[in-house]
Image (spheres, helix red, strand yellow):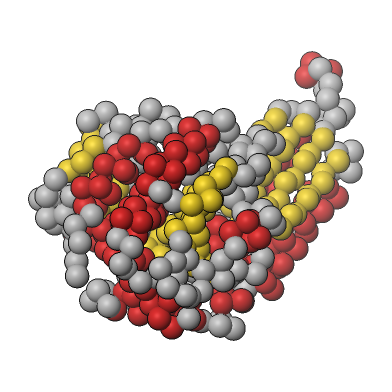
Length: 413
């Protein structure tokens, strides 16, 4: 049976997207920004209003809840993150709905020069007739991952209002700070209490993802020799020049995000801050295989060592820290959660597709901590930028897939 969730999903996404909830990598707090509590408290309240059980907001800023099972079966978890990406403006989001998309170019009211064209985005060309949601042109939309939030909330309300539906216990988690890699703490697996879980944080219709990047973070700090520039001859060591040298020595043509795709990894400079006396470079290292990730770390260290050797009066340090690992390493040992999601797709005439994620999800960390957590599509497209958009009908299909998944898990559990 096909149910019409379109209007509820549209209303939820528009309402959630308008709430500022951007995370901040430079903040030490958890969540990293106070504004995320606006979303977290709202979801806590909405879950209580629809009748969910065990609703709580943890000290780590995670909203948890239970949809009690109507039959015996494994406990499945459903997760989405409330924060939006810090890479682009996410304050003052003005969501808009394009009813019955006509298949042509989409323009934006707050930036008349911005155009979203099906000629550049083939998936958009497939969505003629759908209802699309975008922002106004000067912000991202935040469908990553408020679409996932909307899907889970819509599913939860439907299960609670229809106790005749057969499903096992469902645990819900809305996390903060996923976009800065801090959404899953070591406490979450115990708090979640699920046998396996799914993140609703994927893209095109039918995507069931069980492979992600392995990821490390790097921070390079450079201390030069500071002196008045009028007296600097043969005395000053300019930290900014050394930082530029490090960046330029790294492979530019073969190992950056803009020059790689598929299963190729990269080294990405995300931030450079400082001045002539001191500089800090932040980088992320990505590869699908651990040896490739280690090789990128070794390369960065060697470049830093070479630049250090060229100017011994400076001090250059390179710190590399763990972020997350490819969830395939664990999921390939037991593909049951992936197979269930694929069966749920096929039950709705959707052919599942599994492609490696050129990024990570909360599921990457959660799987590493012992809770197998593949990723399910929501429909979100062009994320982290002003052209971000999503089809309401894709969201509705994801909701249907999740409802069927809960049923199948109980039947096969």
